[in-house]
Image (cartoon, rainbow, N blue to C red; front, side):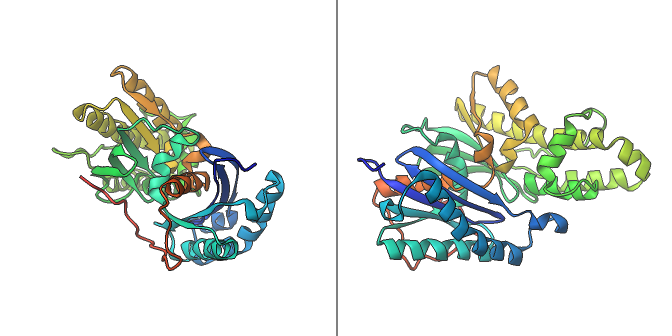
Amino acid sequence: MKNNKSLILGIETSCDETALAIMHGFELIHQITATQWIHEEYGGVVPEYASREHEKLLPAILDEILNKTAIELSEFDGIAVTRGPGLAGSLLVGLSFAKGLAVALDIPLYGINHIEGHIFANFIGQELLPTPFLCLLVSGGHTQIVHVKSMEDFSLIGTSRDDAAGEAFDKVARLLGIGYPGGPLIDKLSQSGNAKFHHFPRTNFKEGYDFSFSGLKTSVMYYVKDKSPEFINENLADIAASFQEAVVDALVGHAIKAATDLKLNRIVLAGGVAANTRLREKISTKSKTLHIKVYQPELHYCTDNAAMIAYLGYWKHLKKDASSLAMKAIPNLKLSFRN
């Protein structure tokens, strides 16, 4: 396996996905992601349970990925691990596991920003990144528009002033009694619904590219409050589709306006909500008429995964930018924006 390219093991435990991946240079060799379905019955992630699951799953997944790839631990040149943002306990489990491996193998440790991983997940396997571009980063915890000038030069130009888009999906799913996780369930349900069934409000600020989804969530709450259970059940797909359309309209409208204003001809989708069917469809259609190319990550790179962590670990390995073994988890870690 080994040649002039290095082998990097990536570890991702920021929330409720336990994931490992192996990168050989820019090439993904294999990845495994274990979803913790234990949280489904609670309608959301229970942090303590997430930490316990990571502790149980990490050793087993490591054994599995080594067996499937026939790679020995001694062959690795570095360990990349998510240091934030995320749940404190989950991050600590992954970080401790990575530190133990790095010390035992006497190889460098690379702390990775989870958000940055999502941004560059589109380019796994590519040695040249087509920067600059505009990134629409949409997840359960973040909704941001980022002007990416280079691998290390970012500028935040838009963000949600309240709920993230993914958070709004989860909250509305609970309101409608659909279940958890809200985003994929609403997406699937909406495909059989009429997006014009009801017009929910779109919040637009006079200046800038900021988002707001709290008012939209409240609008859905008041809409269903006066409706009978029979009405809601009968029109559930239509209500879900109408809500989803309001979210997608805001995301696509802001992203395209920002790209046009900045004269950028590339838009990159990132984050868990980037898997949304309607978002992918609408931004592609709207962008095509403006000659803007849209990069959409493969679905398994939209949700939390270790491939994106290992990928950035390789970049850090090339720059000899190793982290200290004293590195701490940072649950509220931000992107290091430079304007």
